[in-house]
Image 1 (cartoon, rainbow, N blue to C red):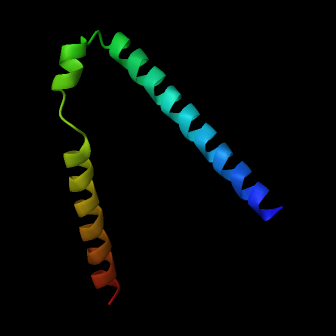
Image 2 (cartoon, rainbow, N blue to C red):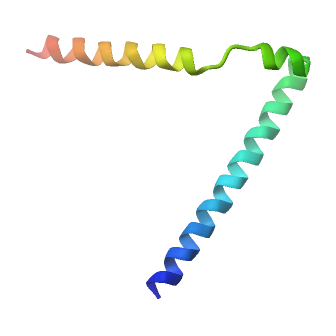
Length: 71
């Protein structure tokens, strides 16, 4: 019974991941069309990972400053 539950949970997770991926691709296509970007322009866009990394660093600094100010 537990094994069956585990299989079902894994199948559901795979299904959700596929649905999420498909939705994300549709959203990206709609955004690209709305902004009138060509595929070449989209490829030339910078990856968001650098911005995400910077924001994560800023968040860590803010947390540290907040903790220091509580002392």
